[in-house]
Image (cartoon, rainbow, N blue to C red; front, side):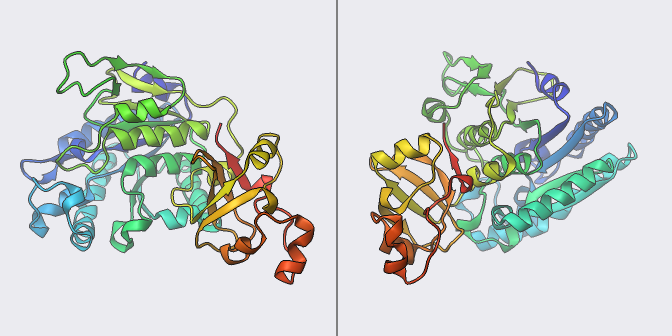
Length: 368
């Protein structure tokens, strides 16, 4: 299957464009010829009644020249304030390049800058979703990037692979296409290992697949193959197929969507990227969760982190295996007082009657 065939099978598609494709590294400028060709292909998909959302990298790469940042310095080595300034300089070049290219075909584009915090807050998440849905319903192509200039290091997606997966989950897309400089996942680095074999289809993402992937290589891009596999894991768990491809028509790797995906609220919970704390549970609680029950205080052995009521927390077993993510019904200060206790004791311990469960089953997304 090619990326074009994957698009043919879907109605709403998120396409992520990597910096290395968008940028002429030697000149430190936008590769407008590539953008023109890419936009022409997207317009052909639009004529076939597809809804296309673009997540585009390139802002930092295109801001390097004016900010005096050498192209030899990997993105991860650039100090955050300097990187944010470069993004502010480069983002207009990215958007203008797309605007000019799509205008040749009579298609409008819209600039959308998102932050992780906005997508992990349920109200702003839904508002952003409504905006994107309104744009695509009018035939406008959203051009999305992370709003680098206002973010702190710990509150960033870190790369647009993860952002693309989150956007796809947000708008209930059918497919994510990650366009990059490689034609998908290999058993080893094909650039250094002649025995590396291409993997055309992945049924379920495992730790073995993540280990196959390396980190980002030196250059203009932030995300390496590892971030793409992690994005595939997030997307497929939300019921969305993901394709890693070097072009629309060449070979690629297809990561198949889970057949029984959770509902939209649970997809939102499951794709939280920075849970505020950890709940360590016992064997009895694990059994109860697998049976579809809520997590009661008596089944929690330990709490890690500082969180408020309604914050996302990771649920783990004593040996460190992640069971899922849920929204805590109690702040960590109160939760610490009631773990290991019976529900009937909560009022006496805290002085008020809160929820019976520490995490209700409707506020929980389990990993399968």
